[in-house]
Image (spheres, rainbow, N blue to C red):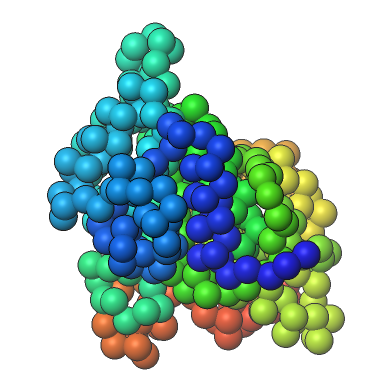
Amino acid sequence: MRELSFAQALHEALDIAMEADERVFIMGEDIGVYGGAFGVTGDLVHKFGEDRVMDTPIAELGTAGAAVGAAVAGSRPILEFQFSDFSGLAMEQIVNQAAKMRYMLGGKVNVPVVFRMPCGSGTGAAAQHSQSLEAWFAHVPGLKVIEPSTPADAKGMLLAAIEDPDPVLIFEHKLLYKIKGDVPEGHYLTPIGKAHVAREGRDVTVVAAAIMVHKALEAAEILQAEGIEVEVVDLRSIRPIDTATIIASVKKTTRLACIYEGVKTLGIGAEISALVAESEAFDYLDAPILRLGGAESPIPYSPILEKAAVPQVDGIVEALRNLVKGRI
């Protein structure tokens, strides 16, 4: 198995999809010769040409509309938002058009469009370029929302998104682009809607996605030395959520912690908490459900404050220790 970075794995997925299907094309700001703000599209413009690797104006609403229209007309467009924060400018096309067309037209059309969404804090990009907005879109029926944490899943889930008949938003945490991991060669699909148990344990279940999976795994290693076994469930898919895997894990460990970078209030952790509270797993709980989310604040520019605004490993360790020891 060869090792690729998260960004290289995404690039390979794009290359494979475009090679296999001439209906697939990509568009976005600075994705051509520049290679994308985070280097994902790289040299694809030289291989496939400007007709299939399209640099777009700074006009998110217009480009999203073009992508949705192309999808309805039979193409398979992939639109990269330079930062996921900018998708607010395109909410009409994503939420009112892409998400609803199949429903409003009686299932006679599909909208196979993929929106790539670089997200998250940690790069010093401040309040308008550092948000985690996946919960916004996961609230909308008709959209699928995915958030891989490893290079292998990044490739497999992007390929699955491109082949999906419905609109998919793939949130790519910016701090993950440089991490490396084993990635299978060739074409493969990582199913949308299926979580992965990244680490097994008996004392507490942590449900997380993207960068928080890595922080949870690091915290689990620290707590292992204290005799506390943490089970880490990598959501991978935010909508649909793999409820069965979460419930099975909670029934085994009897404790649940939801860790996510988005603002705590009305975030992904609230939905997971409710799913467990409404399921048979509720009767297995030996402690209150814990949510660790982002601060009730825009992401600060200051590096020290930026770290303080989202869960970090030391805070996760302390919270999980207190949860297992009955201090919460």
